[in-house]
Image (tube, rainbow, N blue to C red):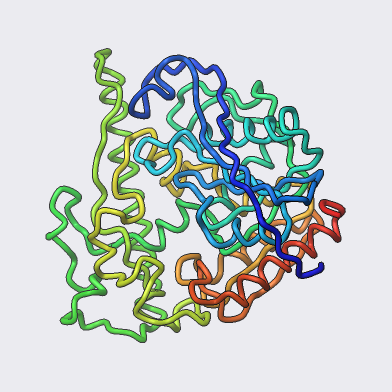
Length: 392
């Protein structure tokens, strides 16, 4: 692709659709008055018409200010950055409902904006969403959430996308949490009660990096065990509330210490080119107890839909195994957020479809201070889309 640079405009997008909710999940007007309202942006290059638009969407945040969508628009690619109904607050997020939100953006792009093709750009947490969406759009099966609440995606008329990209992304929110959560926590109501030799941030812990395989295995098993203990409590509390036949139908709770991945302490665990002792949120020990940690705030239903390892459907390997459209997987080799092994895991799961894999050496999660690597990422995606007939 030619290295042209375009000015682009940011066009606000408002997408709404009727949906009666049994319980309010978001604060304020949107989603509580019989309609869901979604806010996004169209990044439209000036003087560069296109029949294709690339949709960036993340379950829980907005992406229009990230380097990658902006750089793609500057390269002449039409980009939609779509915010879900849970934008910037995932405490009550239901992944099945985010799939519906994504479908409404695709419908708007094709029916209202006039684009003929849509390619999904699954950035970070957007990859598991995009592949979940595509698998369900091609073969809809879901009629209820993992909590058992009716939610019929088979009747949603989801429009399949024409291609999927996975860029700097992990395999799923639940898989990632199972590898990040701090297994030293003994009492969920008192995070100061911890198992001494599983606290990797305690300098007195006799187990220090580099860790041997026995400790890594024990640690990973303890992480998954903590996730499952929380899930058991969630199921029990959900059943208890349901049995009361009262107006309390949901419970919010805090999950303490969720940012304790061995990878951030020991570069030999799932190695790549990342900087040891750091994560995408800065110092991992501080992130572990900070207010913005992964899955810090949740509700019962949301836990089952997005964080429970055994219950979530938003899993990129499972989604990749269901799709028939071309798939591009881009690994950033110095990624300090997406685990190094996850992109290959998703690529291997998609053996049934046309797939390609690219690695950008030394690229971090956000390409901070790496403009040449950001340009390389854009070029890879452009060349791939052109080779698949998605852009001219």
